[in-house]
Image (cartoon, rainbow, N blue to C red; front, side, top):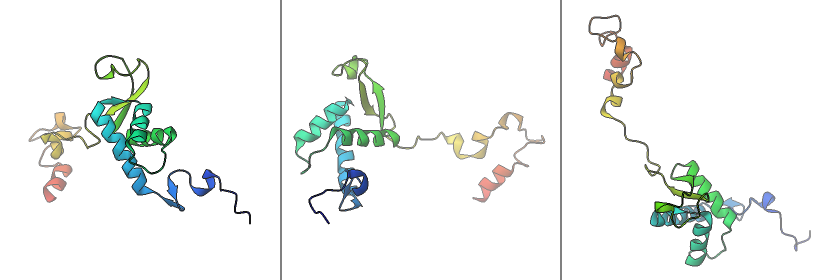
Length: 151
């Protein structure tokens, strides 16, 4: 077998794999670095994040812009960042108008807090307007209310 050949990235698992295993530690550190950069500057482009990570010396290996793009995409899918086009105004003043950029989601990827009424069946009931104390639909006959009380 020829040892001078290196397997294609598609066969070896690509840039996210090390010795045939997913390099979770590398991915998590890279995600943290991307997230921290966006938090610090409010709005960032892939190029900004890549340059910052490259200059920081956090990693022994060189991170490609494609890797940063993939990480930023995963943060968007996880609802930690949102992808926008720059307006060139306010927080976007450092970025050319129309250029794709990223900013932290308002809720930071955390589930939204629910109002007090959403914790009881009546608060989310589609028949709330038809519900009356002595009607066909009432708290006395409500199966959802009974299940909630049994909880």
